[in-house]
Length: 194
Length: 79
Image (tube, rainbow over all chains, first blue to last red; front, side, top):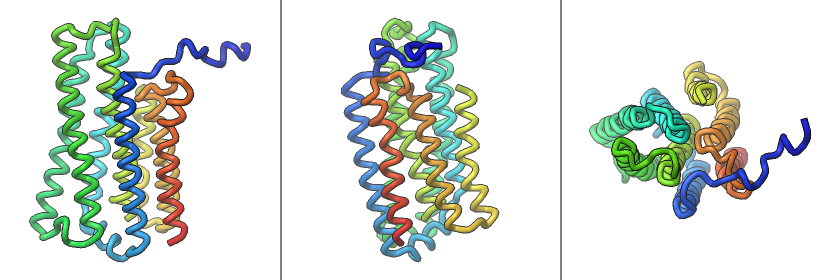
């Protein structure tokens, strides 16, 4: 095996999705990164409040939400693969991803309702200010991702995507994976580390 | 792809299970930091398909999680 066969030629490399979408993704990642660092700084200044706040949360709901988002990401990734190779099942996987991700939205809404009924809100303390702000900001991204998944599934059903031009599909999928990537940091930071 | 999915699932469940078993907080924190990095790498390279992207873009996407985790871990170590 030569070195040439180990290194992929630059000509074969391509960004999955539209350049503008990737600029948007990096901007979003930067915003979330700054918020995460803010959370960490606040936690280092008042660890007792953050520890007490975490005790009120439901780590199993957080775990269920994580499983739902990772499963949805897996389904989206396989949907892209199937469409690219013109195999059937891409549309079904997108609808399944939407259904599975709804577990996250339902779980998050239940947790918000439960915490609110117990008297916790944005003004309770620093931990809950960060908890509600960060998780709701992420929640809105998940909802936008679900709208994008719906549009992709409808377009696949109508035959707008036939595997010859993957730009739209890859752009939508990349956005969805970004939402998942953010949650992979957000979940342990709030539910475990805090 | 299924292997990556299963690896992500295991990495996700580990910190929560470790939390339930009452492991030391310090060990748990570093376990979480390590697992976040592993999960982010798997997701970016395989689900996002950045392993086929131009090197600069791939590096930028891969670097996000390590930079954020390094900042979080830094503050954690200091406090």
